[in-house]
Image (cartoon, rainbow, N blue to C red; front, side, top):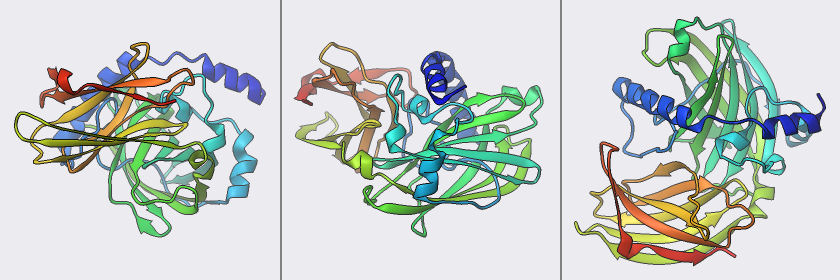
Length: 329
């Protein structure tokens, strides 16, 4: 299969989103029972488990080598699926790794990464020997990420895209702060152990990858739209919607809150009333964001809809008086 045929076959894949959401909600519950999580909230089908997974060894991938690897087929799903970018290739913004390392009889392939606004996206495939019983569980690992020698401490979230007897395909998004995307960054990803979600089975190991990545091309297509919208909730909680950041990978709405007691989120709809797919969020803090799929080319206007999310995920209250619209083109 040549590259063009491979890309066409990827575009035709139908992802069972509803089934994924159901499965990941169950996994989130299991993860919360077995380990404490920060107050940071990761919604949609992101697993709020704090730190991720994979395997030992060491490899260094330079920018030039990554470009040479760009024609290699990816093992498993691509990052386009993680960020709901169907029909739109993100090849120009990826660093293709294609490295595999092995420890304790288990191999992992670090497929590709993307440096986006406030996040590092990671696609990896774990080559496993799971039993049929193992397929009834989610699988996790701890991940440490270093950028230019400093360990990230902001957490993140991810999801298992596919689990079979022979592989676990995993996406992960690590939160970034104060990173100049246009620069070249030395990145190291270290995965520790592979553990079943009920904590009754674990493959011990340590797997490491090192490479160089830059978001220079993405920054050239980044757009920031100031908003400066202020309102106050009934309980006195103050909200300031700061800006909307558009990149080829995602749409991010940034907002600040004071006297935080209420879990506030936002929904985005385009000029045709079509809702944007949300895939991560950080709420209940001073600095917050809701992240959505990237805008399609035909979108010219967005409706910003704030709503209060209940703690038990059973109800929401739309703040109709605070709904507003912004032009994006």
